[in-house]
Each structure stands twice: as structure tokens, then as C-alpha cells.
Length: 125
Image (cartoon, one colour):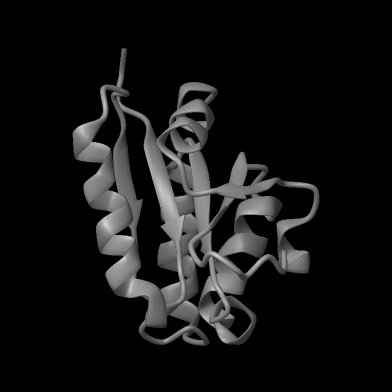
């Protein structure tokens, strides 16, 4: 089975959590690969073109959702872009008591951060 390419959308403030999240995959048996791009200049046209290209090449997108997400213009744009490109999208709650789903997620689900939830999404791509 070919590796799956998964784009990770996250708020810059959650970069440490993203590192932990990506590290978690090394413990599992589901074959996949991660692609992510830190937000440096979220309003730069060239940045958006590069991200859109990466999202297009991805099999799906996982958005790490936290209390930082509502102010994370780059992450919100990535989530919106995933929807525009028709990519499967999953939100993962990364804070125990934060459960506000961004409107950019549309009808895509947000789930607790468990290996089963992440693995099921990736297996379904």
C-alpha cells in the first residue's frame, strides 16, 4: 500500500503540539506520510500558491484545532483551501476543554485526539 500524504493545518502557536502529533505516527502501523508547512507569511500570495499545491498533492488534511485557531489566519485559510480543493478533512481537538469548530471546517468532523480517530481517517483516504 502506498504512503498517504496528509497535510497538517495548525496555528503557529501550536507548533510544539504539531511536533508531538507528527511524532505519534511513528508509533502506529498505518502507512502514511505527513506534509505540513508552517505559517510564516499567511497573506503572501506566493505562500498561498505553495500551500495550495501541497494541499492538492495530499490525500487529506488534518486540522489541529485549539483556542489559537480562531486568530490563526494562515490555518483558517489552509482549512478553507482544503474544502475548495475537495480534500477529505478532519479536525482534531488538541485542548481538553476547547470545542469550538471553525466555520471553515464546513461539515467536516472534529474529533478527540486518539490514535483510533487519526488512524481511521488515514485508513479511509
